[in-house]
Image 1 (cartoon, rainbow, N blue to C red):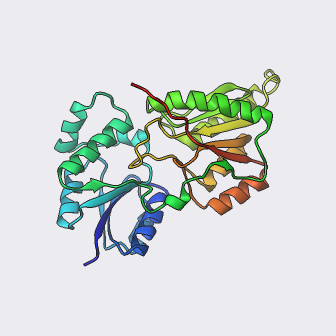
Image 2: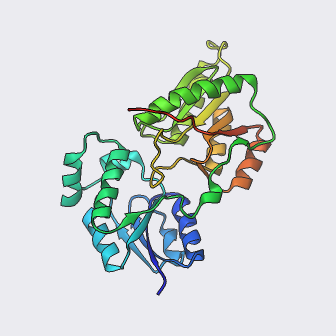
Image 3: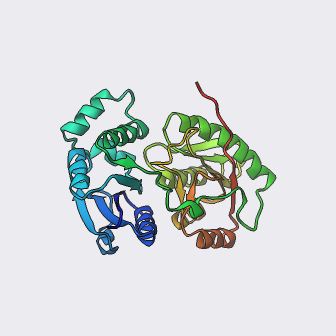
Length: 286
């Protein structure tokens, strides 16, 4: 009998790509879809079964996987941070976990869920397990190199982003002329980029000293858990940057997934946007 893989599916394309890749490797995929997040299209993707759960139904998730004979699972696709803290109706198992958490950020929450799954005999694999080729490699990915100004933004932005990521606040910062315009928190990357664009436009006139060209820096956490919340960029990232007047995207090599790589790079080239990936610096935090 083929090996079974549980897929805990959030929003966007990520779960679809994992499902495809797992199927092509001969896995039977059992999907736990999150009512508040997952696209209903997941029903048509050839999983052996799709179970719809609400955020917070941890016991139901475990029971479903056990009943289906799942011992390995992957978490793929974002669950909006806002959702986690607003629309969640925790069952007793999750409520108990929430009480034991030292901080209420997503990492400690999902880390706690991963531990409970492990205790129940379900191992959470890296979300990138089947998508290694989509991890960005080091170097300039577009035709255009970063300008000196963009390079200054990147260097400053990476320093800021790594601090922010260390506290698991968000993974993206937006910089203009070595000034931090926006830091992503619960609203998500696209919203942070759009907010920066609106801010720069409203400043135009009085803040002619600041160039409106924005640099977007997206990093992994210093000790990124590759099982969840791996940074992802795709076509929508470039579309959002174009709307906001952002000219440069800097990523962490080997730690960030790029979906539809070829079309993303083509879109960036068409818009004169530069994309560059650097090896994350090794941080030693006690």
